[in-house]
Length: 267
Length: 266
Image (cartoon, rainbow over all chains, first blue to last red; front, side, top):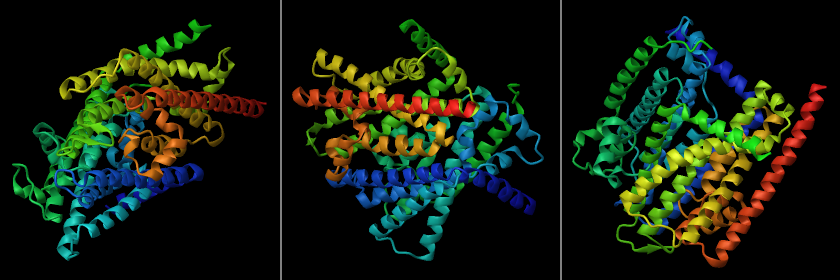
């Protein structure tokens, strides 16, 4: 275990150093992320200033959802960016090199790329989230703090597993292009709004198949003291960690079965 | 002369055909994206009839058209391709050919993008058009002008990516600038998320001096009939001006880069 920790920091450290060689680029990217987050919030504000509420959710509550989803998303992006263009490894035959390393392939892949630029996104979403927390008049207690923390970690895991499944598909299809990136962006976007605005089919999709409703919507019921379950069991508000663990098992098994049938492209 | 460049277009079109599965999945996810926005606006408009000159049908049409046009931003990879060519040194073979580098890049991109337009954007649009009962442009002439405006917007988007790509000659690593311009500025000021009429005054003023609204907002507002008569002509002139400026900057940039490359080689 300790060996893995050491190895993780060694590999991640090497990657971070190599990225910091291009300081200007790094700076631009952080700047770009912060600007776009701030402006997006401005637009969201402009929108809700005109309309007051979305299906009974106030501006503060929507920002709360947005901040929560974004926080999980940015944590996942820091740790799991490697899966983003994983197909590169297959197209160029670099996966073979990873497979002969004396550590689990997934561990090696994740450790060898830790994207610190997304820290800027994480920090912005922390600020957004704290403001939204304040606006929604939630009282800070130990329970609330623990629940929030669990929710964020589960959310990060859920998004990570979706990314893993999507990346694994490339083991069959060779190329997946920007699919993973697109899928994650689309689901992240979907979590920024209360899922009550979608028709039943989309709600079922976001609850059971791409379960990102557990990243924001269901836990928010508990935190914002709402009870809008749309016919789903009320216990779903505590469901995030369970969903995260189940998804983790499923996606890891899928990943392993993908690796077993992997044939090198030979190039 | 033109035939030479058309070959690039045709080849790029055929290359895209190879990855069928990828294209279907991309379409599915795009549809999910659009559904999010369509339902958001439906929810926002409950109990409202008209906001900033858009009724529900008008706003849904705007959102679907702008989201469809956004696909170009998602799928165009000009900056990435140039960066890769510079890093691997492959760019040297391109520069040795007796062809114009900018024109060659544009005709290759046009091949990939016409495939996207035909097999992704058009079916997606028709699906939403049928399902949500959207409107058509006010007249056949408007439709024609819309198409021209889309092409102008496309050239502007291409030129921006081209310029970013050219930066690779100096910076090697351009992911930062790309993220800043394309994912940051362009996403916010192109008007894909909501029509520019909804922007707060300050953001609207910033949007007015940047080229991004010419990529998505202008063509979309022409389609919905929001821009008509004089304002339509102004919009298209602004588009033309940006085309001239950005294509020109791209040319200057790549000539300078080309000279720099020669110095390194000698």
